[in-house]
Amino acid sequence: MMPILRPVLVRVLAALALLCAAAGAHATPHVILVQNSGWMEPFYSDPQSPFKPLVGALAGAVVQPGEALVLASFNQSLPGAPSPKALLSLKAEGDTVRRRVNAALAGLDMARKPNSTALADTDLGEAVQAAMNVALAGKPGIVWLVTNNRNSPNNDQATAARNREFYALIHRGAAIDRVVAFPLRMPVQGRHYRANGLMVYAFAVGAEGGRALDALLASGRIARVITERPARLKPLDRDTVRLAPVQVEAAPGVAFSQAPGGALRADVDPDARTPRASVRWNLENTIYPYTIASATLGARSVLAGETRAIALASSRVNGLAPGQPLPLGSTMQLPVAQLPDKWSLAALKSAGSAYVLPGRIELHLAQQRLVLSQAFRERMAALFPGDPLPEIFTPPATIQASNAVLPLEVRVHYGMGPLAALGGLAAALLAAAAAGAWAYGRPRVAQVTVEDELRTMRGRPGTVQPVYDKAGTQVALLKTTLFGHQLLDLREGAQVRLGR
Image (cartoon, rainbow, N blue to C red; front, side, top):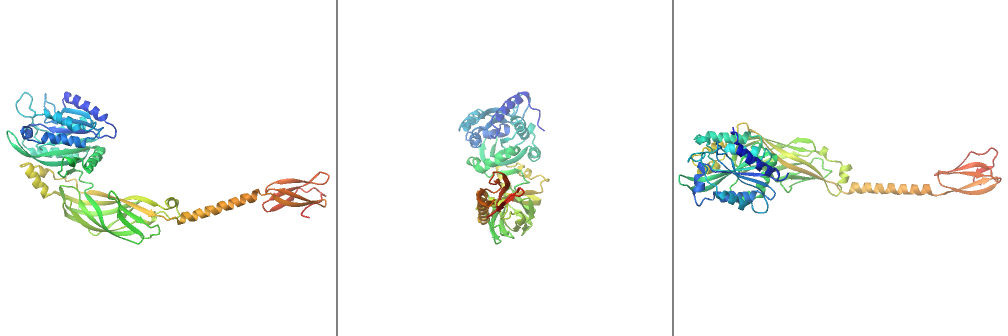
């Protein structure tokens, strides 16, 4: 439980929260917490310590122009000695971040308890919660924690229990979307004792913070400073494995390939009636430093609102170490009924190109049991001798399943034939309409005999003309149609007829 923040700390970090808010809707604020309790003594007193330069280099690599940065030291908050304590707040511009962080850290030394020569203790959970709740004001961002991994509030020697509290915050904290840790080799010799390693944590707060951290890891900017592979602490229930297609035996009319970005692409002929394929995958464990000791596998495809089971050659996985590929065979079928007919509007619009149906392949791991890899245990024992930390990396018992998703893109290629046929039909209809219009508008000639006098009259279809005798009296009406002429309203006794 985080103690109540001292008023002075609230005022300081609240001002920094305003800076984070001013950074912009799409900028990711960063909070870097640097431990300066007594347990960090060799990192501060060793003249060759690379500790402070590392923090400056990391800040310069991860904080981009336009993003807000809060730099603070932390130990354990006590009356008269607030923690965390702000050292720097800025909105990044150009490439000045590293220089300004180095300058702010230059005078930082180990903290002491109020009115005492005793060095300050450490509370990792308090520092992280203060960063999330006050500096970030509950909004998305990334909190960086630089520590020797000794969590000992009030000089409590039960570090295992304190670390369990810290990891409970990680796994049960709903606001924390993603956490990775970088155990670094950093041998330093102090006046009182020596240390072998340093830990850098990255806490992604909120889904936006998670996406920002993923983008940072993928960009390689962190790797420019920290070459150690990131150890994932959270999440352990999604994206735990990766599917990579190795070989595809497709049915006639179907061709599978891997699209840029890793998605599986299926190019389908519109006449294919059984679009299915046998796909051989490599199933790779992506949750370093955990080995998937055992799990039950199930898979399905989701496309155009239709879900189909994927038959797997094996439904079990055992002893899958991080980064290790496991061959996995499968048979999958695409939903023919959901593919547009070649005479449909969707197909005609896509003529000459491809009609794209987005979907996905979902892999579910049930009864999942994770164990910490032996190589990671050995590395942690060397960096933090006597630290019970590797045992605490054990995932919560509640995490017994995980999911992985592979994007699927079905592309149906429609030729120009149907469109050309419809174009020809449309042209024929237009020609017929034009001919009809011409015929309708062309004057028709009628021969009318009035009192033995032959007359020639002209009229367009649909018109009605009066017919007069020699005395000028109207004796009939001549109606012209597309099919000929008619005499209407004949006057009684009038001598009028069509033709001669």
